[in-house]
Structure formats: structure tokens, C-alpha cells
Amino acid sequence: MTTRQIRKYDFLTGKRVRLIFMNDIHTSLRTGDEGTVKYVDAINNIHVDWDNGSGLALIPGVDLWEEIE
Image (cartoon, rainbow, N blue to C red):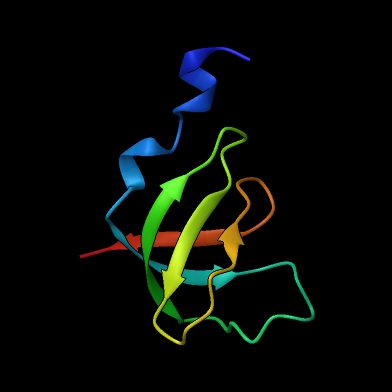
């Protein structure tokens, strides 16, 4: 894995995101939930502090979200 791949989503750290779709039937997160990106790990999972208290990560290529202001 190259440094470029590792840091692909690093620009999102500190940004606000809104959930569009999460492929997890067991989560309490719903479409429209918002949170702040805490960090992006080495495999590009995007760890979010969701406003509802959840800490579930977004998985690029599986989950859908949008950056908000």
C-alpha cells in the first residue's frame, strides 16, 4: 500500500459529514445523520463522531456520505 492510498480520505479529518447510506443492519445510524470526522485509519476507514453518540466508521466503496459545511 502506498502513502497516497493510505491518505486518500485524510482531507476529511475535522470535516462534517451527512450519512446517505450505511450497509449495516445493526446500526442505529440513519440516512441524514451527521457527524464530525475524527480520523482516517491506514485502510481508509473514516472514523466519525456521530451527533447521536455513535462512533461507527464509514467504509469507502460500501457506505455513502456527503461532506457538509
